[in-house]
Image (tube, rainbow, N blue to C red; front, side, top):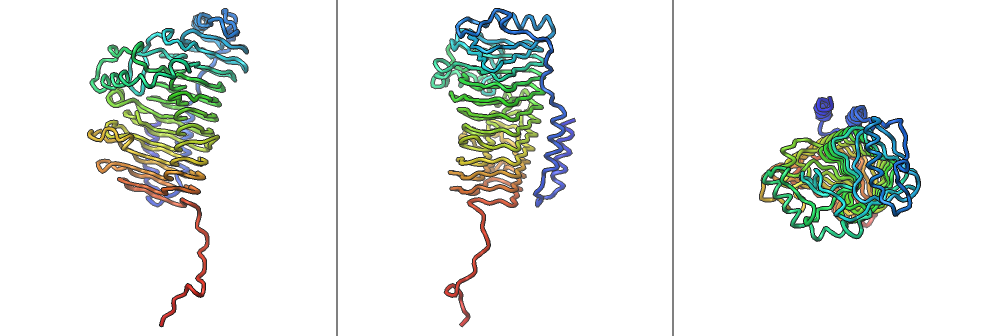
Length: 461
C-alpha cells in the first residue's frame, strides 16, 4: 500500500512543476498514511513487579536472574508488564527480552549494567551495517512481537571504564568485519567478541514487530543507544538522553519501517538520529530499505540532528522531519551522506518547520562522504528532497551544501522558506540538477533599496 502511495506521491510532486513551492499536501498525505500503519506494542494487562522475582534495588545485588525469571513468567502468561520500583538494580550481563513484555521503569528506578565485557555473550547482531556475531547488547530482543520499555526511570549502560575506551583498539576488528562484508563471508563465520573491541549497543531490537520505547532516560551507553534493526511498527516517544560517551547515537533505525519518533530530548555524544540500511554488500544482498519514518517535535542537541547514511546501501525513502528545534548546539542540522562504494538510494525526504541556533552546516548532502570509495562505481541515487521551513541563526561553515557526482548528480531538491541569519558560505551546489529555491534568505533579508543621494547621481553631459 505504502509503496503504491509513494509512486502516486512522486507523480503528484512532479505534476506541481519545477517552480512549485508548496509540497505540504504531498507531505501530509504521506504522513497520514504512515501513521495509519503504526501502533507500537500491545501491552499486556497482566502486572508483576521485578521484586516479586528476587530483585532488589540496592545497587549491589545482581538482578539479572530476576529478569530471566520474569521473562519465563511472561512466556507462561502470554505477556506481562514488569514494573520496576524506585531503586538501583544492578545487572551483571544482558537483559534478553521475550515477546509480549513491557519493562516499566517507575520514576526513581535505574537499571545499571555491569560493564565487564565477559558478562555479555556473543549473539546475532550487526555492527556499523555489517551482520555478524558480537557482544550482546545490554537490552536485547530478537524475533519478538509486542515489546515495550516505558516509564520515567533511567537505563545506565555504565560503560565509562570499559567499552567507552575501546574505539582506539577497534580498527583491526572493524576492518575484518568490512572485509567479510565485501567478500560475502557467510554470517555464521563472522564471529567477533573477545579481542576485536567492537562495542555493543545499549538497546537493540532485531527483527521485532510492535515496539514502544517511551519516557525513559538513557545514559552512559557503550555504543549506539537504541538500535532498531530489521524491525517494524515502532514508536519512540519522550525519551530523554544524557549519553555523551563515544559514538552514543540516540536512535538508529536500520533496515526498518513504519517508525514514529516524537517528543525526544536529545543530548548525545554523536548523531541524534542516524537512519541506516546496511553497509555495502550486506545492504545490497538484504535489499531491505529503511522507509516510512516520521520524526516530529524533537529537541536536538549533540553532533548532528538527523543523519541519513553513510551505511545506506539498501536505500532510504519516505522520511518526514517536521516541527523540530534545538535544545543546544548541533554541529550539523540535516545531513545526508554517502560515497561511491555504497550504492543504494535516498528519495522522498521531507523537512518542514525545523529551527536551529548556531550550527556548522545547516543542510548538507554529499555523495563524497569522507573522501571514501572514489575508485568505485556504486554511485548512490539521491533525489526528491523537499525542504519547507528550515532556519538557523548562524552557520559557521555553510548554510546549504549539495554535492553529487558527475556520474550521478543529486536531483530534484526543493528549498522553500529557508533562512540563515549568518553564514560563512551561503550556497554550494555541485553536480546537481533540478534545484529550486523560493523565499530563501542567507545572511539576512534585504530591505527596501535606498534612494540615490545627489552625489551618487550620474548626469548626461
